[in-house]
Length: 444
Image (cartoon, rainbow, N blue to C red):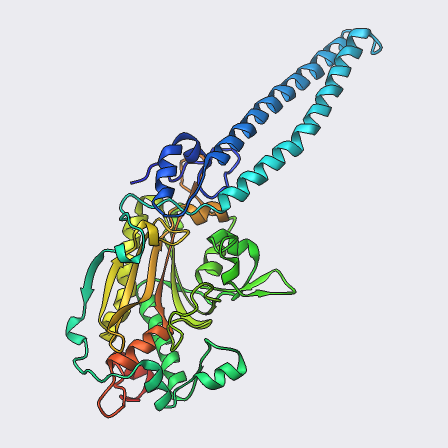
């Protein structure tokens, strides 16, 4: 496991909100460079090391000047107290030196501020470091399959219509009218389609609440500081929808508002772990994805999703990741939808993640498994950006929590999988048994 993921903040110590631990970069530059290289993009940490050295040199100079200024103040005070006239040449010399020190300190302040801003700008663009257990690879082609489930539920029929075709035939999906209202990559759910969406949302929430998650219904308009804390900004600004007249963004996922509920807080260790689940509509431009999944429910600009978010002790975060994946899998197993779990390699890993599993559901019309959930451990990456810490009783200082999240699940993609895997020869759709109490019907 990668060492130095977090360190305790001692009383009076300045907290490092530079995302990746500057101490880690400073003390293990080769390790950090190697980890970043595994992600495929070119990341140069030398400018950070140079700026960090300058900043620490300025801090030493400032400390020395401040110490000398304090010393001069004491000397002047002692001489005046002993009866030396304030106009004495020696006192005047001390005062002149003291004034010179004040000028030097005033000149150092903007220099330090400028260097800190430059470091922050560079480090904000750096992704999290892959964990040692994350396989090395260049693209999704290198993602190893961990396991499969439900092969016996894969339909044997060969004439299965894509979900958008059967949905339009049944009158439950309407893309044409949604385009008229908005633009391409939007859908209107009608009648039983809307009911199925609501049933899936309620079923997913009920399942995760029973598993120990506390439901939250958060704001879906969120500010830039919240987007930055979870890693959406500045790197993914082009993929978000921003309100032009406000510092507000439409939530790309409930991960963002839920994680930021605790931004800037110190949590008692007794409160950990914290589990939250949330339903929200999600909004993404899907920048750079045009030409892919242009039809159907797979890649929409607006979609519904159930999100699972965890705040945990650093010692348990990788164990918690495995549990999180199991929580997401439970939905597909209850719906009897065949799927597989893959682990993302370094070249396919998300920006904020150190380790990620994708769950991919079987879509028979294309003969492929397609992502329906991504479950990630961010260790202290987001906690540093958002300054989310915890305090252990009897210990000095604080530590950064570890955050995790995963989809439990993407609702539209789950509907697509149902419309295809439960499609019948007569053009009807059997409702999965687990959903029948919610819909109060057995077929569409």
